[in-house]
Length: 180
Image (cartoon, rainbow, N blue to C red):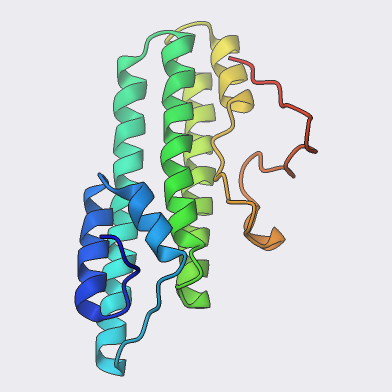
């Protein structure tokens, strides 16, 4: 995979690679200059496949986060699980905002990620209140400060930067304080 896909056959290979998850950076880079040119009959099938693969990747992030959280019994493991999920969400965010997607498909993917992070954040906060894996105050603090939000790329429009804890990027030269 070195050239952006344009035919259905080329797209099948790219979507299959993204489904596997091993070539995310290559796929996302290719999507920046890819074209979607399909017949009406193939278009619906193609978009269904993209949406299905995207939903599969969201489910994998959820399962991975749950697995990491169940293994972690301290603040470091808890925070690392959230940070890891956020990194995985960043890949999906870059996939969703690729300029090759039609607006309705891109909006669906953005809305799906925003809903996932909102529900996951609410579940993490509720879990931190009910279960005490380690100090409950530290758990709640981690949930609130280690924001599980979609890290939308800077090139996205302002309307796509919503999500839990989303905030404007800090001015150049100003760093954010990360607290674990």
